[in-house]
Image (cartoon, rainbow, N blue to C red; front, side):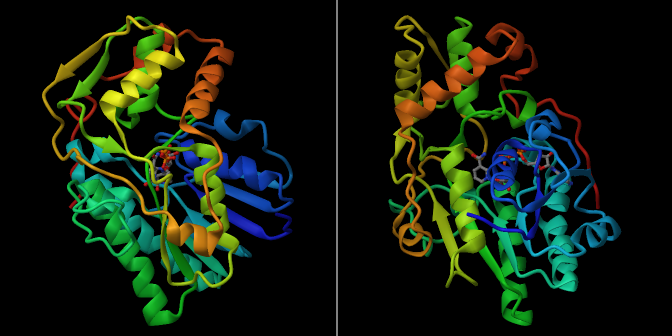
Length: 339
Ligand SMILES: NC(=O)c1ccc[n+]([C@@H]2O[C@H](COP(=O)([O-])OP(=O)(O)OC[C@H]3O[C@@H](n4cnc5c(N)ncnc54)[C@H](O)[C@@H]3O)[C@@H](O)[C@H]2O)c1
């Protein structure tokens, strides 16, 4: 891809957003990464900041600032949000950012006349699969405020398309993993947590019986799919899954990580299930193939090795990194209520 356009990425210092900014920085585009750094890190994009790739620390809920950021912007990739575990301890704040924040951003993008707005939603809008693979017309039955607020964001984006012919497309990534993913706090995800625990000789903690399944995609592939949605023809108004189509249980994930780190003695600690945990996810991938020519390139086995190598390159041990892990990371957090 080669473009001289001005492109805004919200959540641009986060896990997937920073990968998107890295990929966009190779395209010649002028990039504005907006993030309030609540979970993102400036270091995630520090190596690509330049006179064409700019970082703006801002909150997407700030309508005035968003209007300024949107000036002259051609395309928007909207990824800023608060996560699923956050929604369990702070549902109102989660809604305020994920749903109301999206509405604020849609309004400022429309006022600025952007050419395309990509809303990055989530497979969590489906809830537990009623049938697999999950096609885009599968019922949406979110089990958490996170899933519900991501769905509300989708609905606002689609409403703008219907009411104002606003040029938008919705993508629904399934679980992503890879460099710059989160192990820490309430952002901590299962793959980095398992991997770091295995490397540190600590048991991998599974909430429930481990038979719950996910569909994992390597982050470079996830970001490539999101980018494709930003530029492909004939996708306006569409909703498109981004996944691998492969269903992996948490028990199988733990076994695969044990193989990756070559620690056959790695232990698993089973604990009571997490509230709102989705039991089954597996993407139907045909629509992404047809409309975006999207197919993940990095195999699961290879992706895990790449992530392990990334941790090995950090000047920090697994034990040290795990100091910021919270095991039951949906509990014991300060509850913010904004009404
Ligand atoms: N990681 C996954 O497996 C996954 C799966 C499906 C969908 N998604 C979606 O992809 C997107 C990116 O997720 P991620 O995993 O990179 O998460 P992330 O937390 O790393 O990224 C979100 C970013 O948004 C920023 N942010 C939060 N509130 C903000 C606010 N009010 N104003 C400005 N910035 C704010 C955070 O600091 C963070 O950097 C999200 O929209 C998420 O719903 C992620």
